Length: 181
Image (cartoon, rainbow, N blue to C red; front, side, top):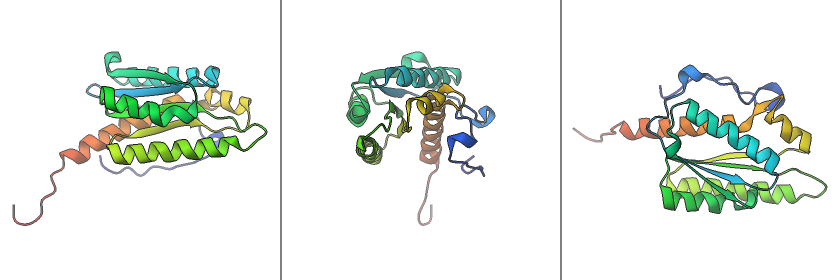
């Protein structure tokens, strides 16, 4: 199924991040993933990682086809993703981090740089790089999205990765012909 009509609500407060339609998710049996986890805010990022990993395995991904590396912080996620792409050639890389706003605007610089870096890497490599980064205003908001009352963004990142790999495989199989063939 190339296109589904889906109702989207962007705010986490309106949606549990761990809720998705399992029946419409492709099997991950033949898929290979990289997961890059930031150590900064480890209590949060490791909870996100667990949700991500468990979701991949739940949907048929062989644990031997899941390659994990840790990087010091969220800012290092794009480089970690690039290293995984070069060394393990995954179908997609899931990048997990958490940048809590705090008292300064450091979060804006880090979040923008990571988003742009992962976007650029995904476009140039052809490998989907999933932005599984929490950008909360405080620690409680992060906990609420790392297995708390709003679910686990790691689950959402895993589902996104499976969907993107399935989309890539589906569109690659379509033969586009020009002319009289």
